[in-house]
Image (cartoon, rainbow, N blue to C red; front, side, top):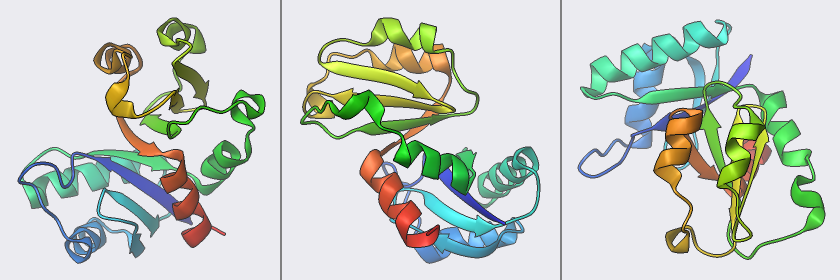
Length: 171
């Protein structure tokens, strides 16, 4: 069964891991048919373990192999397909890129809503917090650290990255 793995903390600063090195490390964790997408920590694997067991095996294996903590966020293909097909914000658009923050547990939308502004739209879709900034993420006034403390650690990708990964490997 295909599973999508999103990692936090790979290829930051002096940490550099090539796609073949990541694939090898995931195979050592027991994952099959490893396919890496981009160098920012995205993989599609074949694995029949339940989600919690897969996450634990990958985190433990990567932490041991790399010598540093790598948070792993497991997603099912149908979860990503649903995210991509949902008409977020009813067709309204910002010029910034829609961001997807993957969290471990689905947050309560009522704790996310107070962070939203006219410039930074926020929504919860399952275990994802969607953030659509009016322009560049570098120009935001959104307090991302406090939001992350509120909903839990996350790893963030653009909606476009999730879409391209899904189309390439899960069609």
